Length: 334
Image (cartoon, rainbow, N blue to C red; front, side, top):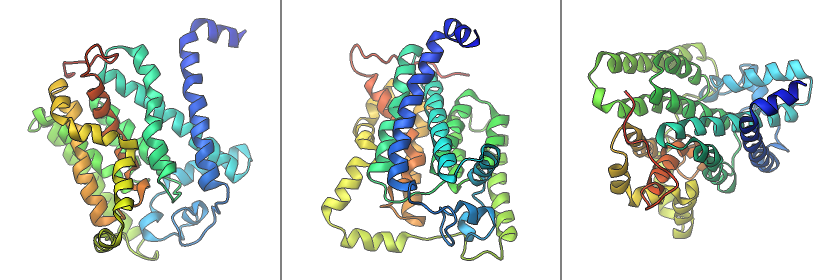
């Protein structure tokens, strides 16, 4: 009787949930069998060792990434199923939530919620390229990393500052990419840059990030290695020795080539939506610079948090076509 009531009272919502769950399972099945099926969660001296992180024996640069391992441990204790099963369930849940958040973000950009609900799983397309096809490395926090960036994106647009600050604090226990939320927030609020609200929130986010980095430094002072990893020298050398095919492949197919549409049509995109909602995507420029300076620019999974910075301008570009099925919301919410 309960199931019948759910289906009869909310048929479209149930159908939408199924529509999001099935591609989530498909995506995670492919990811799981490429990376996780042979993974050792007890691996020492590497970022993927979930139990190494839980034992506080991981290198400094990844020991603070406790968010997913703690959730993993709680689910493992409660369910009593195997490690691989817990991981599979958690990445499916995160992928489902990522699609759901994408749907809610699209509702802030485009008018038709039915079209938005059908379009939300499209985020899996650039994810397939960055997570699976071009990616050669599995790290347990990648799904959580994208989820937190997307949720922050939504909270910024909705101006839910308290929840944004709380989420930002939590996100610092997952990955340093959460720092780009500060820039995304500033770019979205560029018209309100010197208002009391924007200044306070920006300062709060900055203080949290810097304060936690200082805390992590002293808290993990006895852990091996260091926080900073400077990859610029290695990246410059790689540019010199790599074949044009190798470089062109990554440049063209990262994000499934969606960034190329945004890159070559940014004026048209800006005319279609000249407000903070599209300006947020400019975060991609300093993001790529930081990747080049501090990480490995050829490691495709490093670009995972930038997926929303690419897919949203692409969809705005699609909305510029005559009789497009996407109708943008012209007025920025106040």
